[in-house]
Image (cartoon, rainbow, N blue to C red; front, side):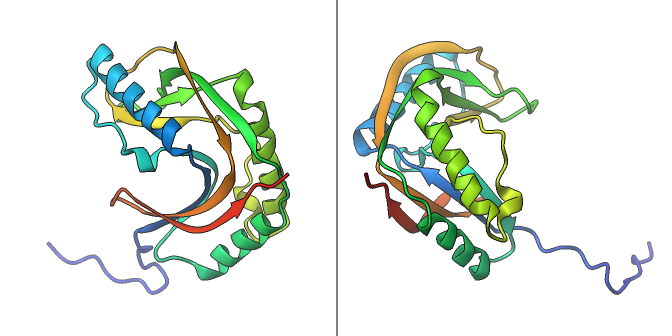
Length: 194
């Protein structure tokens, strides 16, 4: 079989290896409670997916893209946007779980909530407004479904109430995720102060 001819200017894009996102992490007590809940619900629903490690539980506020290499200019822009944001600590409460059903397989099984997430949603919107003033504005999406992923599984679990999981958000974190390696590296942190 002949080789595909090479066309200049049509090289394959490099595969993304690095992801940037802003996140809120639970404190140690809440992360431990989430880990116990994930194990309990996994057993109750016969799920096969392995729960995430407690240090990986987080709420993604804004995904800032996937890249082949870590783009330092975008890291700098993200840091600038976050540094301009002023916010006090706020409480977060998740009180139910469900599977996201947008994919036929490997569905995220997540913590969700309602009334206990109003301050989180307002903070995410404020961060989005700060991002719009930078080159990262295209990543500031108006739609936001706050959640903490517990595990991934092919089975779908309908929404159900759970014992509430609460914590106080005290910092914003810019995270570098190494795609496919299950590794999150905090690049910068901003304390939330009254």
